[in-house]
Length: 116
Picture 1 (cartoon, rainbow, N blue to C red):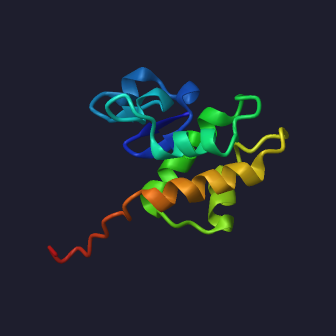
Picture 2: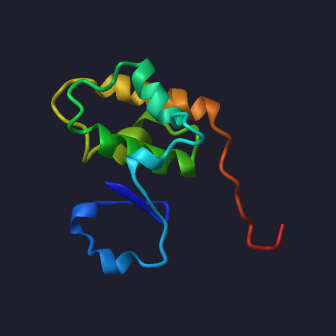
Picture 3: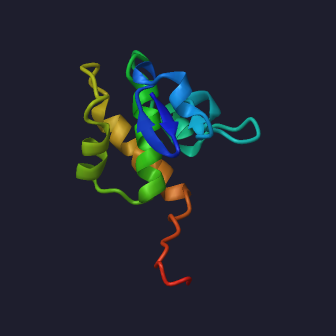
């Protein structure tokens, strides 16, 4: 899973030619200046990476959610991550990690459409 122009997308279903001129961010490209993205750090802090199989998808989908709202409800988190939560049983840790990351991120800028 990758972010294409900020939207989570399955990279395995995309032809490379359809991505010309678009922003593509992988899980490896989320951090800045050698630091982890706050969600990556929170997942480590909460010990939410049980097997690692689903973690890349959880991370990308979680980052996209946090770009829309830094204070998502538990239901919003579960809905955003539903396709990625597997049977390893760390669901509560993942939810806490998203909430923890949101607490340190700036709220998204809201554009009103009137030039303000």
